[in-house]
Amino acid sequence: MLLLDGKIASQSVKESLIIETKELIAKGKRKPHLAAVLIGNNGASETYVASKVKFCGEIGFTSTLVRFENNIAEKELLAKIEELNTDDKIDGILVQLPLPKHISEANVINSINPDKDVDGFHPVSVGRLVQGLDTFIPATPYGIMLLLEHFQLTTKGKHAVVIGRSNIVGRPMSILLSSNIPYGNCTVTICHSHTPDLKEITLQADIIIAALGRPEFVKGDMVKEGAIVIDVGITRVDDASAAKGYRIKGDVDFKEVSKVAGAASPVPGGVGLMTIAGLMKNTLAAYNRRNP
Ligand code: NAP
Image (cartoon, rainbow, N blue to C red; front, side, top):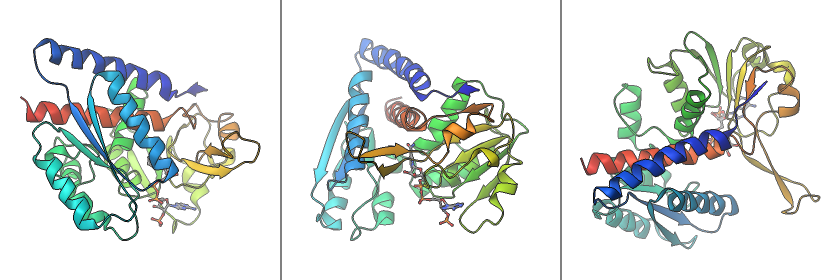
């Protein structure tokens, strides 16, 4: 089985971003600049944002971390986003999700300048994705496309089954895989919590994208011999024997699935790393758009 190692694939994206950033600096241009907004002190969100800020430093981007308490008023958050929208030195804005319950996710996403929407969640970005126009692809599906590209996996004409239909992973993933683009051109089935007989469907899949947030949900007997299995899931599962008191589990039972799959991505060390790579590629694209 081919291990779809996100460490290797993201390192390769990182190296190309380092070269591109050095070229910009050599031309006397400023560095690309990502602003990350973090609200509250959710442990997972803190970790994600810290990884993004670290990656920026490693590739030579500038980053600004804007932190707010959990009880920040929506109005105050929107005012800060507007400030970042109009700041010429900021190329990309990401607001780490999930947000506190009293803040409307839709209002926040809609308030980001579409030219700086490096998470690709704004309706303008989504509409452009659907129409096959140049856009910011949501970072996780983008990262998965980069993973497929790195390992040069053939997707054309294949049956892809995407489990999960969220706006940030499943739905954009299904659009990309069905699009007439490199590493697309699949016939796509999208499944969700109302899909009956899921196993019958996954057994027909040449490619499975598991993005449902249910630890080790995809078992070996749900996978066709030789299939490509991409695990998007990240769930913290309590484990007293682990140093942190929890372990990160994916949506795929890797031990079982690796015995039947032709290729599979691990968790951790798979899609999570590629998501950051996708975000950084979007940030550079935003910079290039704004500084032609
Ligand atoms: P989400 O918004 O909760 O969506 C989950 C989707 O899975 C929904 O469409 C849901 O169906 C479907 N689903 C739930 N249980 C199911 C079942 N038993 N059978 C079939 N479908 C089922 O989650 P998300 O934001 O897409 O994230 C999914 C997972 O990916 C989570 O573990 C998350 O932490 C992880 N994630 C990882 C990255 C990364 O960088 N690796 C990035 C983002 C998310 P309904 O629509 O019917 O409810």
